[in-house]
Image 1 (cartoon, rainbow, N blue to C red):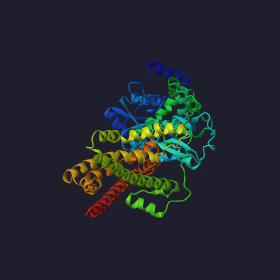
Image 2: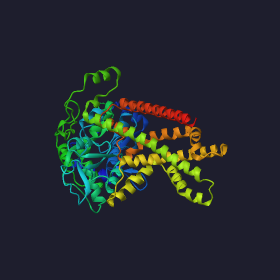
Image 3: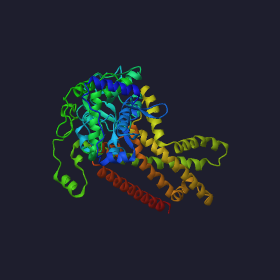
Image 4: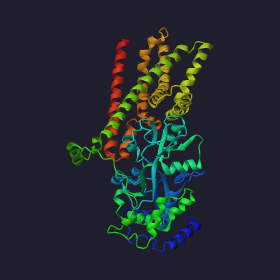
Length: 537
């Protein structure tokens, strides 16, 4: 903090009658805190897509209100600070994996997350959920959005509630930038997000024709978190005490003004409570119960208890499938599985078709003189662009760019599945075209009297290994489709894990699924090869 901010915090502390003693490091730190002090660096996970709580400046440095709180923690510990960018979907995973020591990343305090990690009390901020969209939209309330496509960001605590309770059709994007782009290009009718961030976005970067819906729902406090095993150690206690000091001294209120966020009634109430003499005396557990703030956002409970076999499987083998007893989760996983299989099959068929057409076209027109070269120019351009451009970039261009133009011109708008299938087919198909064209050229040199179609079975056998590799790789790349809100299996599993699913169970299950899928693809190609060999004979 700057000297002016320190002076203002001291002044506010004096106004609070000196009731907030400065938090000191424990004499005998244990666990993670001892490791941090020995290492000499505090590693804090913060967001970089949530201005002004966390963002990048012109030089690429992470700045914002939450990085300032992280700096205050590090200074009190007497260590350096390392900021690590996290997202809504991976912040708790990074924490439990030990990548970061503390997470200060606009995280709503929910019962589900408390079961996953060490969320601390008291809370330090709060927010609700609003919708952002065109001003001339017919949707003025959440009831109006029922059944409508709404853009969401992976990992937000309110996503499931919006789908189950409010009936919206969620379109999930990996980050806020993609969600906002999708809204701008007409891929959804509104963007559901924290009211604090959306109001700030409108104030700092107003957009003509867009506004924030007035109805605010699902209000929840924000929590700072440590790893679940560290909540009751000296690290968890120290960070909790620091949050209390920040409320008592008005530190976060000062930072609100520094970052031009505006006065928060929630923070002002906590400041008044913590500044009162003896108003927040520590209870038996060391936390001041009267100043813990609002209760956590309740978890979504399924009225049906999980079957005994699921509980027994978890207790005996460690394979935890308990979240799958919920119909909502099962349905989402089934949909993700179906989309992945359908996208893989479509991409393989498309890649083989594109490769066959473009490859035989190259073989048929090559050596036909100037007119053959002219006719081949579009083919070569398509193959070069499709091969050399990353498929994720192609998806962005087609889905957000071309798709947005078509949507605004009231033409047919390509959906996420069609876009992903087309791009993956072209990407692998262009490689297949080169392989088939090269194989046909070699076969023609060996059999100059034969036509292109007569040589094709032999060319397929010659190019077989390369064709299989291209198609297998494109199946592996199907997960890229999550960037354009296609809920394939990888993104679906990530959502389930972020909502409390067992990481080891679902990630290992994902590994087994893709291993079996690859074996299935290879088996089908072997059958196809035997059929072609038989036909050629």
